[in-house]
Image 1 (cartoon, rainbow, N blue to C red):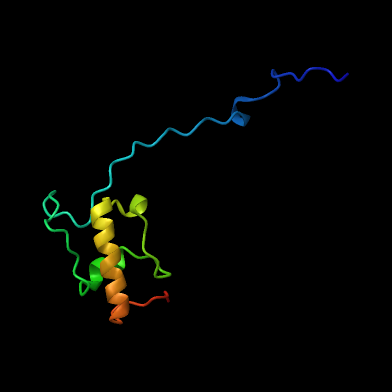
Image 2: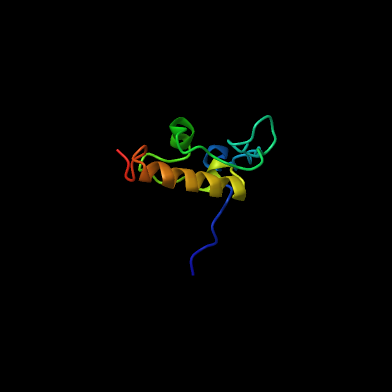
Length: 95
């Protein structure tokens, strides 16, 4: 049998400390106006600047978790992006 490991020889520099957990702030919905959801929720498919913020480099639609959209606004964004792609205002595939 091998002897039990000794912990006395370890220096303090070799012991790793845990990183502190970051406090997460809730992401703001990019479609909200003054903190209020516009009714009805409509995203203009001609607003390319907004739609480009909600797609990644490959041209894929960014998920709700990353963008901070609510379910209703994410649905409106998806519809607007698909319309803009169909009208050739946005690419189906990225750069």
